[in-house]
Image (cartoon, rainbow, N blue to C red; front, side, top):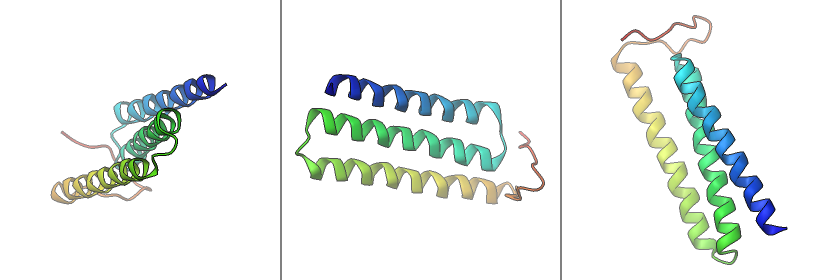
Length: 102
């Protein structure tokens, strides 16, 4: 029972991560790229939760540290992406739906 639930969580995490990567590759709009990268990071957190619940169910400190590390990488990614947009004078206005220019 526990192994099938673990494999179910791994499958869900891989599906979410591939959905995030597909969103990044398919569209270069700023909002879609940010949301797709968020989906990828949520998938990595789901995979971490499943791994810690299966391999070490009593180790709460390591689980909290891994969640903190994923959240910190998410914040750093958003700051770097915002600075990239600000430097290129690109708009985050959703109503325009402008594409990036290389």
